[in-house]
Amino acid sequence: MPELPEVEVVRAGLARHVLGATITAVEVLHPRPVRRDPRGPAGFAAALAGRRIEDARRRGKYLWLPLDNGDALLGHLGMSGQLLVQPKDAVPERHLRVRIGLEGAADPFETARPSPPQDKDWELRFVDQRMFGGLSVSAGGAELPPEIAHIARDPLDPEFDDDAFVAKVRRRSSGIKRQLLDQNLISGVGNIYADEALWRARLHGERAGDRLTRAQVRELLAHARDVMNEALGQGGTSFDALYVNINGESGYFDRSLHAYGREGEPCDRCGAPMRRVAFMNRSSYFCPVCQRPPRRRAAGTARGFETRRAALAGSVRADAPQPPR
Image (cartoon, rainbow, N blue to C red):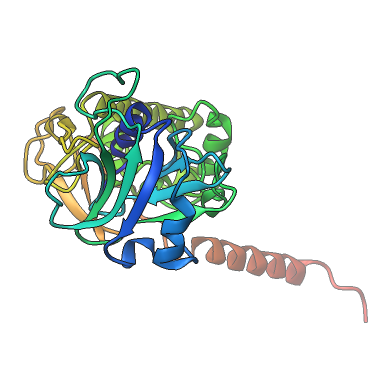
């Protein structure tokens, strides 16, 4: 699934090439990608026609294009979604689901946005093989779509609160990787980059948050930022043809991974064979030497402690001098 760096690469591409463009027509070729829009396919198309794109923004893995009337085109790539800027007469992609005609868009194959925009007709195309992603029009969502207001800021957001994040992590007993994937706590850190950040921090994903020091959590957060910024610099991570930028080009960060997808290969730090374990219907990759698994907490430890304390209190009461009868 595309993660924050991949989505940011797409957002940046949209910002360079569709800002100021006017939507001339919308064609929904399959209803599933617009299933979250209460207007239905026809209403979705009507809500976009004639609107001008004002910006390209992102919260975690969600993208939105603010429109000139205060609404927004909200999108999520899901597992295989692609947003491509293509010439109107380009051959339709096999899994093309929605096509949005643009007037005034810039050539996506130009390194800088030309001024004035070229006269060629362009389309913003939503291509999605598995159709877990989708598009919708968010009423009044130009500043922040209410549909995603509950999602936390991501580590690359200038307004991300490091202190609050550290405090929340250390109050929870759940494993640190599970917390990194909690979009209500921190957004944009997906499975790949969580494994990479944990490897760099020498932390096992099952280490409980309340067993980590403030320094450890801060170091992990710094590594998460570093790995995502490095991925941004290489256009994201592509393991197959499903993730591409708006030009249809793949990223190259998969060649720099230290943990994810490297089961059985030697750890780049100590040489021990990397391991893979099942995790939340996905896979986790780690070094068994550099990232030692935590010792299991005894089941019912807290309950057992309370029981022993109550028994001890009863024993003390029983041993206390009894008043004369």
